[in-house]
Image (cartoon, rainbow, N blue to C red; front, side):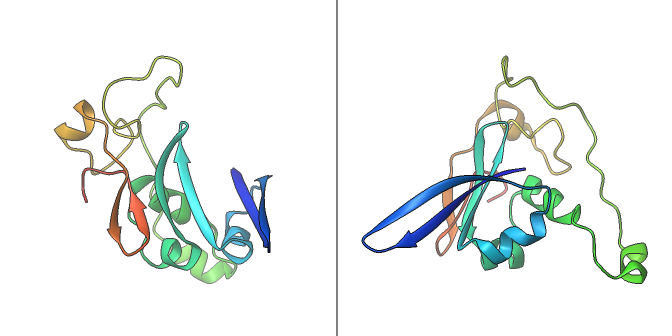
Length: 130
């Protein structure tokens, strides 16, 4: 997974690309998180907001995939596997890029690309469900 890490030291900020397989540490090193799917921004919010009020189905799938460190609790966790094929980023279909894998997709998702909009204070999502 690929993230951008911004370090703020007045008078300026610096943005670094950051790649990790450990999504759980992103919460602790980031003030804000942007979730992208096939090069499209699907959700943007403060890190606590993303973890407490995840809105986009792809963001939810990412967080559901994070293992729980307690083996007993992990064994009780309901697995939510995504089905469908990943669409071609070179020849994308119309509509939301995640529609073919989204368990909540509607007809609007398959035909119209959702706009990124603020649905909670400082929490933006590109999804027809909101």
